[in-house]
Image (cartoon, rainbow, N blue to C red; front, side, top):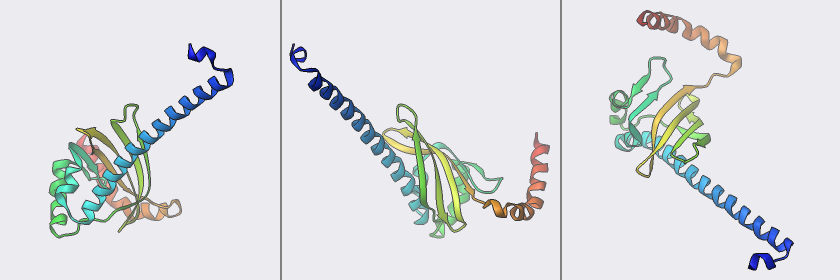
Length: 176
């Protein structure tokens, strides 16, 4: 009955206010979830820089995959742990700092995918991957690290890597 007695302008303002409030709350929730994913990735990179083996690998799912810059680097979590352990044991693994990151989500915010540009000892690298929400915590399920190659230098880079990768391509074709 009260709504019927309100003039049309007041009614429009109430509806507009409700709509704005709804969308503002959705945007705040989206930013909160994005902040959680960013914090997870930043902490993961920090754990490597500090050679904190447990924190680094605890940030990954048990069935995680890590793909490195070399064509032969496609590791399960267990294989990646074996590869990385000597680096962590020396007290310094690698130091990656995100200089740009884009994060995206599925509709129910239980899956996130991202791409990031990183400042590294190899200069700019690109990381991309997938995180899943497990028991209220974001975990890295898949990560791909790649070196960026400026377009103007790609011919020179191909000349350097061609002999190594021609042999590898032959070996991989023979495995089929």
